[in-house]
Image 1 (tube, rainbow, N blue to C red):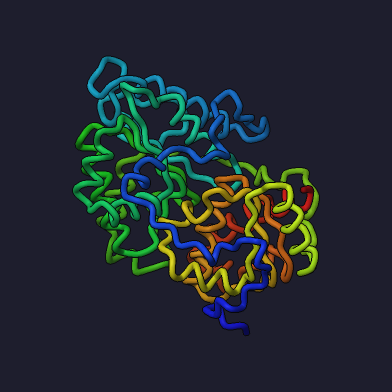
Image 2: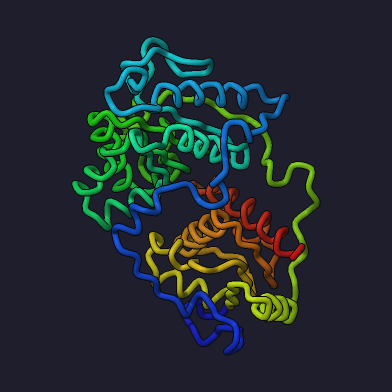
Length: 367
């Protein structure tokens, strides 16, 4: 197997830039400024979401979020902007009875439009009097690491709404951190909205001894009303099979053509890229892609090391956020993660990554 740390394995030319040449150092303020929906969802709204008529839970989720947007579209403490336990239970599908909780949680498989709905909620609420923040789970944990927990709480508690996409509890430390963060934001009157592929009382399942952290997990679950969003992955609904991998020569040729046309192209050997990702904190993967409009990989192979695979998942998410077409040679992308990973505790993360990278590769094959 090639040495994933050998940067001299870069299969590129002097004319084509690569990601392994980049070492971004975004400031803490940049991390705060980036807490907005990614370009892929910049224009998302409830009106542009198309519920599947055969999946009534999708329409239910839209109705529930519209209702919450109406309640939260105002400064903290203003009439009609009462979040959390002061509001009455809304819509259909909420878990439990009585007063609504301070958060709403969308659970469902990947590709059913949960991120579209969450960004739609952000756009419906965000205003000068009711500012909102939007980020993935890992972006919030990274923010707390970059700013310090107390400073992160102070920055986020100034928001009317905090949206958390792809809520995951990857280790016990994150469990405690996120539970404490949510508690303090809720106590400050900040509304919470989250999406995940895992119900909140099952977070951490299959990844660590959840029973040791049951109190923290239950604390997270107790803060959300849960809505299930059913359906199939829209990225592949009625579309052809994933494109066949290109050859190394074809990848290089496509990269050179795009570069000649003025695009922000990067071309990397897959193994060299994996080695470089180990030297860049995942909080900087977005900055790593600044100015990039198309991504090219040579020598894609299955990734069996969990740490390496999880870094690749984060990079794939940031690429998808930015709608970056992907052209790749080597193993097909649906073989990127072997069975032991696809059947393990992070299986939903890997399935989402394959879905998103396949969609980007389909775009790359058409360019």
